[in-house]
Every structure is written in C-alpha cells, then in structure tokens.
Length: 592
Image (cartoon, rainbow, N blue to C red; front, side, top):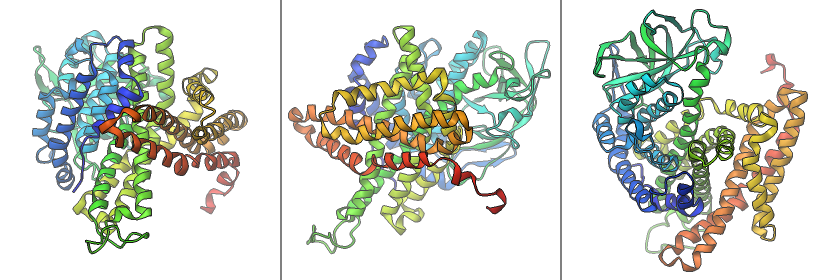
C-alpha cells in the first residue's frame, strides 16, 4: 500500500518562512493573496490528492489504458476523478484571469502540482500537458487562437498535447518530416506521424488540442525550418463546441515500463486542419516555451514520486519487525525491533528525506523566479529572473529526476523482498520514476544544455543569479563553522566552472565529458545553499516554537546530515571533472 499525505507543514515552511511569501507576493503585485488563502488552497489540494487521486494510482497501474480501433479508454475511476478535478477549479489555478484562470502565483501552482504527482503521476500528465500547451499559446498564439481555445483548455473541458517526436528523430528535431501545406483560408493541412505523445488520445475531455511541429513546403532544412501548428481532434463549430472529426487518429498506444495509466500514443495526421502558432519557421522557439515549462514540471514529478516513496518507506520501517538494535533491544515487549532502529535503514531514510526537502526548497526558489519573470516590478528584475530560470531549468529537470529514481529505489530497498513484489506499490514508484529521466529531453541532454548553452550565454551572465547570492551568503556567515561544507562545495563548483570554460573552448568534447558531473555538482551546491538558509530560519524560530519545536529541530538534524553525508560528494565530482575526457573517449568504438 502506497502512503501519501501532503507535507503541508514543510510546504508552508518553504513558502512563508524560507522564501518569504508575503514580501514576494507584494513584489509581484499580488498582496491580496494572503498566506491564509494559500494555506487553505494547499490543504484542499492535499485532500484531493490523498482522497481522490491516490486510491486509483495502483489500480490504474494494474489496469492501464485500453486501446481499440483508435479509441483510448483510461482506467476505472480516472474519468470521475478528472471531472472532479476540473469542477473544483484545479485546472485553472495559475492560469491568467483573462481566459478564465484564477491567476494565482506559480509558487502556489507548483506546490499543488507536486501533490498531484505524488498521489498519481499518471493522472497528473493529463492536466500537466494542457498547462504547458496553454503557456505556448499564451506566448505565441494569435489573439483569435487564444480567444477560441484558451478558455476551454484552462477550464479543463479541452486538453492539450505537444507533438515533436517522430520514429526516426527524437532529440534531433531537425530531421522531422511532418508536412504543413498552406490553404487559401489561412489554415494548413498537416500530414505526418508522431510517436510518444503523452495524452494524445483519451476519454477525459471532449476535445484534445495538439500542438504539432511540421515543415512548410519552402522551409529551410534543419531546425530553422520548423513551424508549430494547432491541430484539434475535433474542429470547433461556430459556437466553439466540438464539431466534425479532424484528420488525426491514434494508431496505437505504447506498452511501457511505467506510467501505465497515462496514454502514450502514436498519432497519424492525414490532411488534418491546423493553424499556425507564431511565425513561420520559428516553431521550435515557440515549442520551447512549452518544453521549458514541462522540464520544470518533470522535475516536480520527480520530487512528487520521491516524497511518496519516502513516506511509504518510513511507514513500513516503523511497522516491520526484524532483528534487534545493535545497542540492545528497543522494544523488548515485541519479538523483534522495528527496522527503523537499524543504522543502515536510518541512513537510507535520512538520505531520501534530505534530498526531498532540499529539492522542495529549491523548487520554491525557482517558482518565485517564474513569478518575477512575468510580474517583476521592473525590466531588470524580470531579465534577472528569466536568466535564473533558464540556468536552473536543466538542473531542476535532471537533478530532481535522477534523485527520484535513486531515492525510490532506496525506498524499495527498505522493504526488501516485499518491495520487489506488487503488493506494497513500491515497484510501481520505481518504474514510474524512471521515465522522468528520459522524456522532455534526456538528462544527458540537460547537462549538455547547461554547460554548452547556459554557462557561456551572455558572457556567463546567467550564472550571476545563482553564484552571487551563494557567495554573499557564505561571506556573510564565514564565522559559522557549519557553513564550511557549503563553502568547500562552492569552491569546487567555481573551479569546475572555470575549468570547463577554458577546456571547452579548446575542445568541445571536454565540456561534454564533464557535463553530467557538473550538473550534479551545481545541484548539490544549490541544495546545500537551501539547507544552510533553512538552518538559519529554523534556529531563529526554535526558541519560541512551542508545538513546532520538533519540526524545526528535525530541520536542523536533517541539514547536519546533508552537510556531513551528502554534500561531500562535491569533492569527488570536481576530481572526476578534472580528469577530463581521455579515459572516456580513448577506447575504440569496436572494442565496446
């Protein structure tokens, strides 16, 4: 049995105490959104996640989606849960009021998103893709397309997808073959085939709005010749209701390792009617609005799965009796002690806890930057926030999802053989977590994006939003010996950054060889910075905490564990980066 109760106390800590929600909301012009309102939203979202979504998670995985003659049916309970999700307004939470949304800050939306991913990752993909498609239309669609499609998508009556991948091309989108032929009425006819399309066909909404990458007849070769088109499953009527079926059909669904209740579809477009989104041959830039949003969301997916794995493992460790504590029996009244007394089980649980809470704190920092990017008080603030989000997007996507797979596997280990069988639902979490490292740009690609694009961009300008506050914090607290682990790790990061900049100029393969280790190093330093700030907040609160004393003391203990047991990995990563590409690239391809 999977265990999940929304970690509301930790979420409130991250939002209100660590990142100062009151000052942030005032800065983005949303001072009317009170902490009391936020807390009530989080509480209701937590109830929906644990009472509606969690009970159909394991059963949805067991049953999976059903495909027959182009029709996809989601598992039992999914349609009813989605209707309740939509009717309760969760689909409109952070969307703009202009098109029917509630216009709440992204930092609130991301916390709610985490709960949905924790309780039922497969379910979360259906509204999650719609939110990404909404952002792409907001950023690049014409006024006519926005007015026609966004209200229904934000309401949740219509859903959205992104169609990039073709059988012969994944990451290298310059190879795609789907064609778009202009028509006299301003529309286009789309012909081609796409694979791995999440939520490409299902029974949850009355219409599905596909955003499709395709080539115009005179388009240049490569990625500079890609345009984006809006292709609905049903063509809207004059009163904006689903009309005749468009020329897009589902040719099949994938049989996957995990996410079995999420319909991953093969779509065929045969003279399908579509409309251009954005400028001709600029479709990749338009789609990246959605892709970058989805990459952050995939990071949140990883965090959500890791939280459920942690809670489930803790529950089992408290209940499972096995052996005696090394220091002597803790429960002499029982036949054996609960396994939570054993050091190695504690090591496992503390590792997961430290990563999960650190990632939640980091996600809150990035979510605030998302708000500032849109609603900052001046252009300089908005640009700095945009730089920070761009830098941290590959880190959040890759670090959080790498850790999700690592920690869910560790949580399964707590169960021993009982984790490997289906009864407890742990093996599902491991299977579900694995795809997060692959889709929306595999994590190796995220690392290359970080070192190849983000680091050198604008002469290193994107680094300032991260490096400057971390360095200022270390200098301001230099007298505190507990800051030393962070200072050492940050020093390794600075050296690694300079090394990659110099070596990469001479040989791009040197930067590529260092990329994955560098992303993990930057991510560890970011988590270390979050834990250092958390320590200061918890210490300040502890003397007057009363009933919350154990919460703040747990924060201090977990921060100490992170500093002593996890942050030292930074030194090994720097050593590996310095080693360069030689041993990695020396072996002849035929020798593998």
